[in-house]
Image (tube, rainbow, N blue to C red; front, side):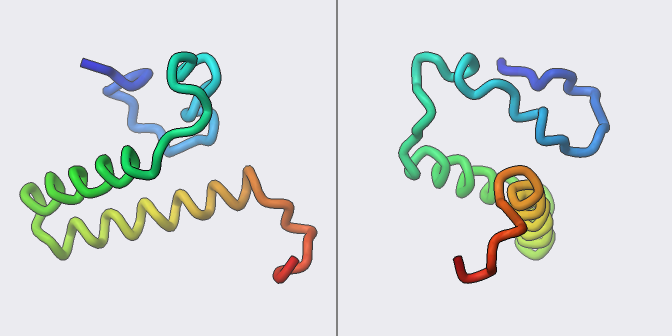
Length: 85
């Protein structure tokens, strides 16, 4: 089974955790159909619902989405551009 760098690691998310996409996905390339990400999203939601209940699962997914958006903005968006550019 795939293991993260350290399954015992309790560190906060860091952009470097994403690793080298090119070498890590050499056989898949940089693009992946949305279907694959939706499959992961909805199966993760199903597991979280069963483990923690629907309300807590939604809270966890919202929190993860906020963190993802924040990190994406910090690492990928030129914040010097006009908002509607």
